[in-house]
Length: 204
Image 1 (cartoon, one colour):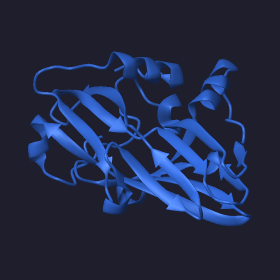
Image 2: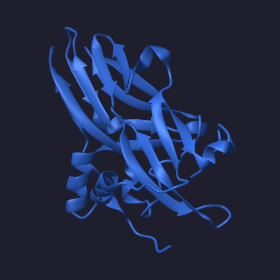
Image 3: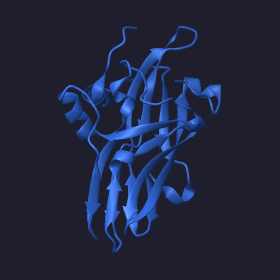
Image 4: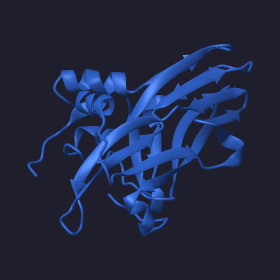
């Protein structure tokens, strides 16, 4: 396969188009911790601040397997993040520090899609530091995507896909000047032909 950089516009376009075929394997994202389970969303409250992730976005993938066969399907990631300052203190959301912790100890930085698109349109470079201040009662919404969007080939997943494994969307913030780290845990579950490979199998 000829390598090419997809970029944020390419991935978002693919997410809208998607792909379905007989025998595909899809990866469904769902909350991994009972107390964070809000149905199709992951939910955490910390120091009067409510953080919600979801509903999950859907992305297609297609690649060559270990035996040379074609593998395809769709996978979900929680990209839409809502922060509501329901407390009485000033909150600073450190969007630039957002990351996705992967199975096995890996970590991928998350970037705001608006900032990533701006950087791509200007010819590349680092996304600007992004810190958002929320007064009591304020609410904000961002769409975060793995920074690998600017490095992967067409059809390659943004992150390693692991059946039955836990991922953690981590968002640092300051609440009344105190450093806090909110982690929203979700699990990917394989549905389809490759699900018979068993839980814990990384397929990326």
